[in-house]
Length: 228
Length: 294
Image (cartoon, rainbow over the protein chains, first blue to last red):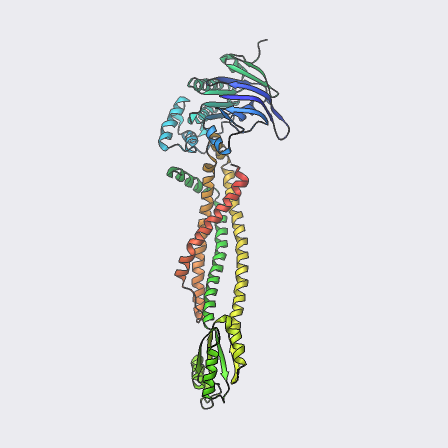
């Protein structure tokens, strides 16, 4: 589903994002990507939805070599990859419903599909009753749920979350991670970058730890930190 | 493009125009002024061409004959001139007829001719209709003929008109090019503001997999609408200005033929409207290339 071979990323300013990363994430997996700030978690996520390209090495997503992907093919890749951010990235001049519908409309979905799909995903994230609210009328956790709903609106095969709980209190954060686990159970491959150690440790999923751009640990059913 | 996508793009375009109300107004005004100047030049050009044709038809060489020329010699002269290349016709005008024509032309001022009747000072005249490009040569030839006292030729005026028209045409083209560039830049700036206002939406659109053309479409429609609105305003302004010019001309230079307004505008309208839209699209293209990077 996601494969990286000797992937290095060096930014134009000389900063190193990733260094010789080799990793495979299979269909249906749930992966916590952990490590301190600046370890390369965001770079890893951004590679997968082809926001950036590797400086060297190969990235394959859904069987496609991203370096060879033509510009006009990128949008179609992204329809298969939903992304959730720490800062939600919602449009504040639109209702919850319209924020989710937006993702469908701009990819050419018919009004019928939109009417069917939006309530369904809002139901799934538990916000059906807030459909007509505006984002700034919602609590942080609710806003993040809207953002998750938008990410899964197109029914993507991969869902990426970059510090989705960074702005949330621990209980709310737990709820968001539960939601991402639900999405994983429904069949999507999910990668969550986080440094919420208690959440990672309590769920015992695959954990990939990055440090200075290198994979320093990759364990099934792991804890946030190596057991001492 | 499916209809609902078009609808979506149009709605977004109108939203963009409303959001940058003042800049949109500035763009429309700039387009309108640029196209107005352009239109006025076109109108002037069309009328000059028309006058030019009209004057061309008026090219006539007048040969004033010596008083003592016999009728037989005159016939010979006329036949000789008639054989020249470019000569359409040669007509004899008797001195009495010339006087009458002069009196007619003077109208109410004809009284100054009173008393001249008995001793008509005008010569017998040959009116030679000639194609303009041959006018000069024929005039020279006729002037050298025996029995011809003097030759008056109006070809010079035509040649000057042609020169003036050429200067006007190139000046107009240069001015139009400058104005077109200015228009494109102003529209491009307006679109840039919309792009800036919508940067968040655009980022999300890219993220969820909207195609580049889908992201660009509303901006092109917005630019096109600005151009269209400007061109319609300019056509309105030119319509009014042309009407005014026609009234003025009817008073001061009634003999000059002006092209009828309805016909002229019916011919120009499609080109102007298309021109406005094109400027809008060019402006959008410029700003999308520089600021949208999709």
